[in-house]
Image: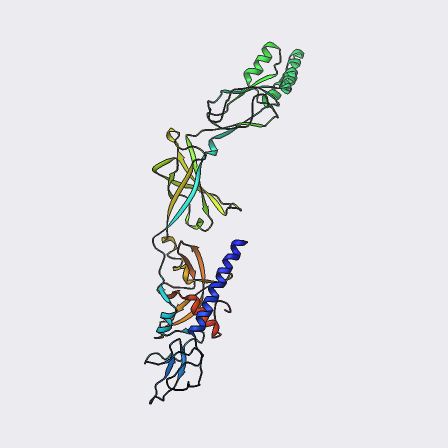
Length: 412
């Protein structure tokens, strides 16, 4: 909220400055009084205010409003009879005083450079969670720390489980009855607890139940998360360890929502890592998160990488760069500088130069903005390639329009 207040305060101060400059630039419109001290000029000469070409007097003198000396209107300075009543006309002197600059708009071209920040994460498709199949106590933990390498089928922990002991006793009791239905039911119960077949066969062979079970690794890789210690009591299904195969990893970058229109699958990303200075790596976007983070206003951009030699380590910080081509927007609109746009909160407007008039004349026009660029906007509607718009001094022109009661950003 504080940032928005500062933003609106800046807009208010800028608009106030434009209004003040407009007061200095504009004189009265249609004043017929003649300043004292003027001398009558013979013929049909017309005298005007350099700050307001629409002020016309039959003889020299001073502008009744701004007090500046009137100048003789040269041939071609008189506006045409069919000029738009909302047009704002400036003299060359007023243009220079207000520092008004114009630019001819053109079609999008070149590339937009997007900077991305991210980090290395394990490939989630090659990551497994090792959970307790039965509740009990961790009698022995075979994993010492995060980073330990394990192989598929390796014993990770030995669990003492009264629950398992009870289930095996049921199998022993069923064996003593020699009833196949009971034996099959007790055996299936042990299988559902993910007890190894070798341990079930041992119970059948010896007729003795055991309260201990070995937890085996269901994948090969690196322990990336350890959630239990030896001696802890665990529940059935409780995660104990996370094992990831780091032969392939993900580089997850965060893209701001304003940059998302320029990021897509198959796009090349060049990035560097703080832990690997002097090297530049290349990857391709394989996935763009369809959901924004509500707090950071970013979406994840995934780049999949082969991790030969384990150089990329989880949580390693990255800085990426994407060069987005603007050619795809060539058929959608034109590019204008950000300084040309007056934004009211509900609509965006620009001032377009009228090429029919010899004197600088400008008309307000509403436009539809597309994607944002570092220094400009793509305009999807309201402007055509080759038109000339005001890119500097826009607030001064709008202030003059407001003082004259014409269409402006505030009363359109």
